[in-house]
Length: 35
Image 1: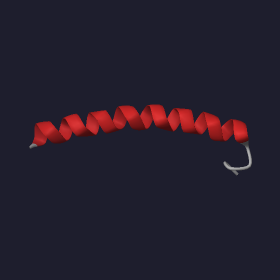
Image 2 (image 1 turned 120 degrees about the vertical axis):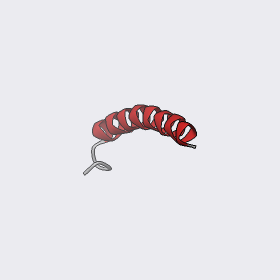
Image 3 (image 1 turned 90 degrees about the vertical axis):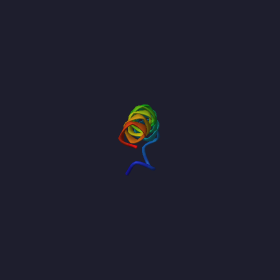
């Protein structure tokens, strides 16, 4: 369903990229602190 709808695909990509970017940064910071 995601592939068929271009609008939803773009929206999901932008949202996921934004959330993923933030989550990855937080995960890296937490990992460094844990070590």
